[in-house]
Image (cartoon, rainbow, N blue to C red):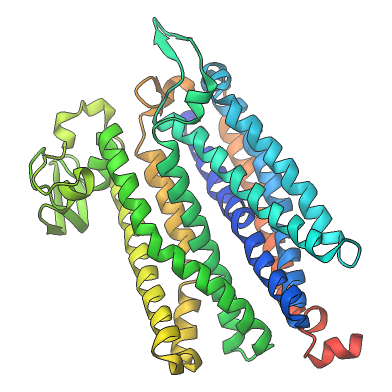
Length: 444
C-alpha cells in the first residue's frame, strides 16, 4: 500500500466509523425527548425508564463520537496539509460553529443525564431537546463543509492564489442545502431502523415485551416517515449533482455516451475499458427526467469528460446501486408498516413483521455508508472540485501507512467497547428500566 492510498484509506475508514456516531447524536436525542414527553404527559413510569435507557445509550455513543471526531480533526492536518493550508481560512467557519454546537450538545447532555428530579420537569425535558437540536446543527455544519468541497464558493482563484475570501458564501454554497437535507433524513432513517430492529428482536425473544414495543413504535414511526421522504431529497440531490458534477452522475449510472432520453439503470457491471455496462436493466428517459426534469434532455456521458477527470466508475456505480436498492426496500417496509397501522392492525402482532424490521436493522447504515462512498469517490480526482486534486493535497510525510494501521486498531478497539457496553445496556433493561419487571421491583 503506497502512502497516497494509505492516506485515502485511513480517511475513508475514519469517516465511515465516525458517521455512525454523528447520526446517533443527531437522532437518538429526539427519540429520548419523545419518550420523555409521553412520560411527563401520562406519568407512565415505563416511558421514564425508556427515556433513561436511551439517554444512557446516547451518552455511550456521544463519548465515542467525541473521540472519533477529535481524531478526524487531527487527521485532516496530518494527511492533507496542503488542503488545510488553503481551504482552512475559507471553510473554517462551519467547523468552528460545529465546535460550538458540539460543546452546547455536551453541556445539555450533562444537564439531562444528571438533572432527574433536580430541575423543573419541563426544563429538564428542554435540555434533552437541546441535545437533539445542537446535534442536528452540528451535523448540518459538517455537511456544509463537505458540500464546499463539492461546490467551492466564497473566494476567487487567481494564478494559484485563493483571494477575496467570503466565509459566509463558502458555508452557504450551492450544494449545502441538498446535501444537508439528504444527510439529515438519512440519519433519521438509518438510526430509526437500527433502533427499531433491536427492539423488534427483543420482542421476538419475549424479553420485556411491553417496554420494547413502546420503544419500537417511536423508532419505527420516525424511520418510516424518513424512508418515504428520502426519495424527494434524493431527487433534489440528483438534479444538483447533474448541474454541478456531471462526471459524478455519469459514474453513478455508468453512463458513458451523451444522449437524450438517457436511461436510468438498475444493476449492471461497468466495463470502463470497453465503456459498456453489462447485464443492467434500463428504463429509458428516466435518468434525463431525474437529472433535468425532462425525459428528452441529454445527460452528459463520461466520454465527453477528460479521462483523467473520471472518478472510479465501478466503485461509484456499485455504491449508488446499494444505496438506491436498500432505500427502496426500506421504503417498501415503511409502506407495509403504515398499512398495518391504518388498515391491517392484526399484522402488528405477526412475527413476520417483527422479523422484517430485524432484517432491516443494518440497512439504513449500509445505505448511508454507500451514499458517502458515492459522494466522496464520485468527486475524485478532486479534493476541491475543479480546483485542487487529491494527489496534490496529500501529506509528503513518508510511512503514513503505519498511521493507517494504528488508527484502524484504535477504531476496532472502540467498536468492540461500544458493542459490549450497548449489549450490557440491553441485557439490563429489566433490572434498571422496566418497572413491570420482577427484577426491577425486587431491586426497588
